[in-house]
Length: 331
Image 1 (cartoon, rainbow, N blue to C red):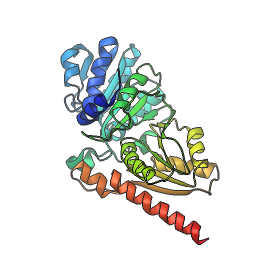
Image 2: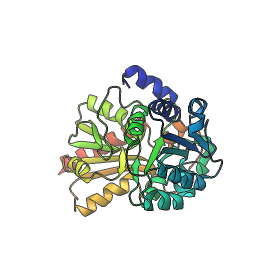
Image 3: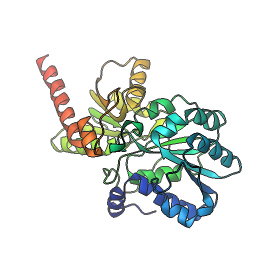
């Protein structure tokens, strides 16, 4: 479909869950083999219009996430393209064994859509927060993990995974009025993160809607005369070492931001790469969610509290850029 500023703004207001339903309804019109499944979250998944228009291709298994994965895997074997959705912790932790066996080990190309990951569930709290999901899903062989940066990229992800012959965990972060990253069409490729702002002497790597928050900060800093690049790490697994290494080697200072616990997420993957390549010359600054149970509240309050909104990211970057500049001046 056409991508422009008007659509980007409209979809941002809708938020990722509503856009997921809208995109899948459009895809279903042209693909008779698309089947959607939900664990009693049809309306909450943004799928109301889908099951009203395509009731024969919507299956609600009830509050039975483990069973949903098994049924989804079975339906792929009879040539359906299956997208199954539930809240992130139930997809990644409650159904982890079924994802491991039915999707990973059996290579069934189910597309598991994790709703409201990170802090997006707000007042529902730690039972519904997707804080550890990337860490859990990264351990499953053959499982691709994608986290779109905004609602336009969500559309790209759904279309790219339609005929993708691997199981996929699609991590949706953010809420309504999510940050806009893309306003024009662009080439999206699974496994190939892209530079939203060309790499510079200072670079930022982020995933999910944190990319949009980081972009607000980077745009402000570049307007002040800095030379900062921004890499959208939309595919966490398979991990594209070549592109990440290219950014690291160009950097005097590297910032990494993620709406995920500091254990086992994007930061961990990049630190593993730094160790493998024996890179010690770059100054690395990271911000993840702490390894603890978190507070509840409005989403905007939470990302600000944990330093992952645009203003907080700007302040962290400014402080650390100045720290490094002062250290260099003193030597």
